[in-house]
Length: 166
Image (cartoon, rainbow, N blue to C red; front, side, top):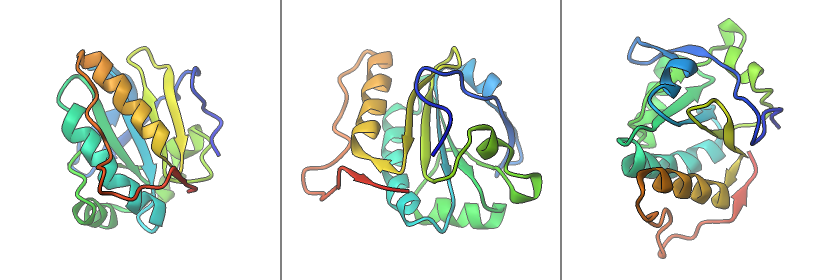
């Protein structure tokens, strides 16, 4: 569960990325919306979800939208996860040693949990687990911002369930 739902203001955070940079939600929002995906490398639903997030990133990540993987694991494990599941968007660390500051601010009890946060700080989509409709809604919102028709996120040849709980 999360206590942050659509329509609410997203709690701020500042986390260190695998690239050594600091990522602050407040600063990222200056560039436009943020897709923040909380995950743990051992989570099978996270492993299933991240290739679809990568597709979203490839389609919409260069147009004033920031994608951010927020890992509850260490840097080495997170880098391995990103390689294995093809995630090329920035990864930041919400580390146990620091008390999981971002995860706790969002009241997370399950991963993956994905948020689409508007530039004004309002949460547009709050999604726990894998929810096909939520990912399609994120795609539609990002396409609308670009003033383009949304491209299908899921291929007709893929067997994709409507949801998978985290």
